Length: 131
Image (cartoon, rainbow, N blue to C red; front, side):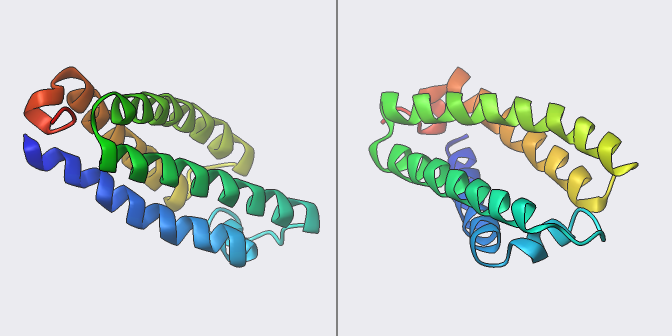
């Protein structure tokens, strides 16, 4: 079970890619969800989303470095975000008139990360959350 924690390093890599895209090429990021051109306001709000991704990624990196309570709190916060992400994906699919591949992927990734987070929080010593 100690290998489960490595899923979070993969999450960090995904966050770097997604965060970079939202910050530097927001139109490309939004284009994965809809073929409609995004107005300037939507592009700028996407950049703000990138800021949040950066902050959450930093929180996860520091949690992995420090382990213990710090990592537990980070995982709890991210688990809360996973649940919200799944709920919002249904709203997004409804707004877009269907399930795009990226919306489906976000649900699948959120479920996988959520399950791993629950296991790590449930068995912190076995998974390496507690040193």
